[in-house]
Length: 311
Image (cartoon, rainbow, N blue to C red; front, side, top):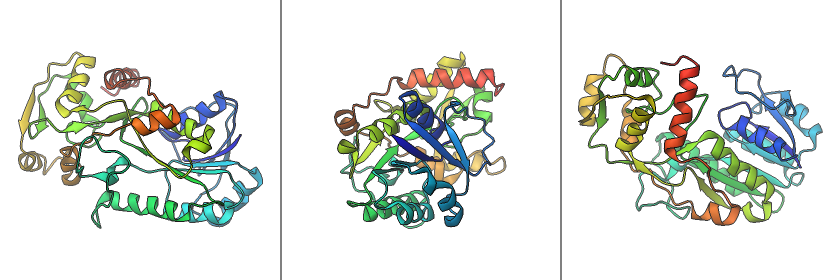
């Protein structure tokens, strides 16, 4: 199977590329050549340089590849329309990455793919929802679409989501020093986190099973949600930290960090919403069973952080 991967040098994308070539597929990554994060691609992955949002450059680089499947891990309105314009009727499958953030705030738990998704205008995830809606409108016999929606992502290669909803370098440093951490509200909000390598497996499975994936939306993550308190507790455990977790109202946290910028109003409040999703559909239709639970994923992140001198 010939696969063109957009966003293939990123945190999840490079795992998708490597996973596909390991299973014998021919993979080309389209890249602008600007990613300096250093995620390692298998030597069998081919790279071509072009900006997917530049239609002429994209056409020149991508059309000669005669790809059968296109996967976009960071879609934009422009890239969706460009892919459709160039490849409708010429590819077997377009796989599009969205986000479970479009469901927030959840109206029931666990949220499934039938949950309403219509974020308020101006909300961060409203743009994501519009991109999903565009892909679904273009879906049809000559442009078969699948949407995969990851939850919050962690994994080696990127700083983890911290106790205030950002990805601050100070988070692991404070844990290493056993400094106290603010726990938003009571810490009982549910969080469901996907390990980057595990999430990539869902894209590989969807690409290999078009008859079971086309026309569908799938939520992907680790197997179950935990409380924010437990999420932070896993990091404490992995690092041998004795940091106290101090329940603190959101407004107090925002006031405490008005000067240092550690707390962003939007992401802090988002962290206090429940994130809890039902993976039944992706398990049953695609056979997706993420091999790592959250505790194991946290250990991998901490090991990476230690090796790269992040704390």
